[in-house]
Image 1: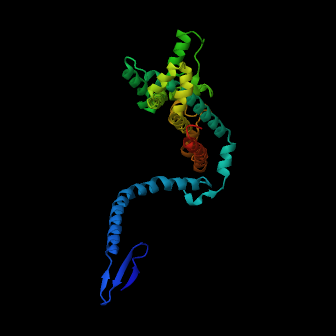
Image 2: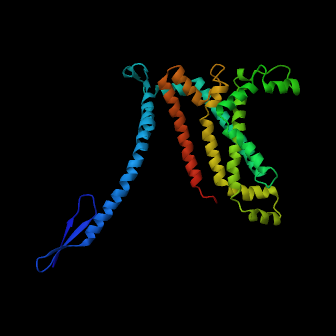
Length: 333
């Protein structure tokens, strides 16, 4: 008896084994048939998955990846919106112009100040609110809902509310400072000052974001075994030692997550800047995104606007790499 192995179709690891007996009878090993059936079954399982994923991939390429690559191309041109074929290639000039622009530099400073202050205050306040709301107190559910209500409130409503509160004429803040507390003699023009105008923007983000930060902190606190804290208290550890040596180390992943998300959110601030200050006075209160919007859609400088967006993308990319390294780092290190 001889055995002949004939390969199956190209690209498949299937062998149909042919056995020739002494009477010159040809038989087939059923293993090949089983392998073919398994391969067909796998193809039948993959095909529906491809069909379901295809619309999502099409939408991703058409509405995300395509415009992304096209805007990257625009950033290297003095783009002519009416006649794109007449656009002039300028290389990295759009990027260098933005980096040298005092308005862009001011927007970077505004965004950095906004991010640093809002992140620190939200992290500190959110943590202590979470500690309080995690206690077994009467009315705990009511206070949890109350603190979370600003989170689900529209950014437009919050921005308009703080614009009214910090209005130079008839604003609620000036009323309390001047007529109730008597700490100022005349109204402060909050929104007309490039420095003071950041106050309502930062405070609106803090007011709106503390509840969400507290919610994430509470989820982290509830993963800490109560027995461990009670044992530490029995051993004589005060609340500060329990906080520093037990609570914070065990919430490291939560802290890193919140820190990274809050920083990325601060860098992408847009609505509050746009509605409260609008970049005024004299383009001194822009964030990076509001400056990108004004350059692109008001000044029709599409190349400059695209360059601003990719400078921000580069910075966010660097932060994302740091995020991955922090999250992958073992908790004991």
